[in-house]
Length: 312
Image (cartoon, rainbow, N blue to C red; front, side, top):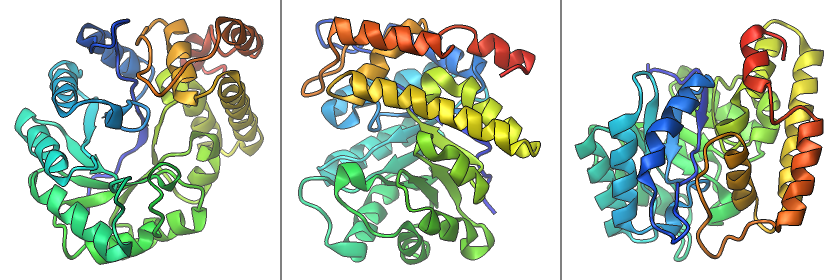
């Protein structure tokens, strides 16, 4: 039986300077902040981290820095997916060399694998480049266009990928997610990836999750989980609804959510700089209006303190 994730894993933004270069100086403070907020891991170079907009060299540098500075108890999962199989294998091998805790891989997004067999074969080769690291399949069909049931993937890949530990499940199909949880007497570590539906996933058995908004709102979700686990369903639903309002306001604010989320992170004391094209941020006017609305909901100030005091 694998060690299951219990808690929230943030998907960090990649810190960039105004000239577009990596800003590795921020990572140490960023990692400490996540742990202070109750996050148990960092899933780096994924969708939120603009992984496929970074060069292989940049991704290696970023992974090295996260592994170097992560405080004890904060896991580092390195996303190694890439359209080039050679690069994906290189990233996986690098993650193993530097001592990352595990790796994850989405399928290629340009020339896509042909069905289940193609996806399993691709992941098998990437996982084999880092055989000592636990391997997560990264299911995010909204971005990759590859949408095979994860339960089918796990059944087919389990015998072929010895290091397969589970999946990062960023999709709305809770029936498939529940089937994954039940496979082989709960063998797999299933990380749910839709922040706005976390409570629904928790209700069907999720106990670990990866998300963008856990960067700046982990205490809100942890309070929701605490309410659910203590039997206060009404309070849990209220907190999930508040999280959805936060997400909706940020998504509506600009042309791309990741750029807006990244800017909102700066309001919480960790300025990760701009996003890389083609992602563009909101206008100053639109963002200022969103900040006013978010503040009115109590989502900028006080969440950390209230959570630690048990009031959220």
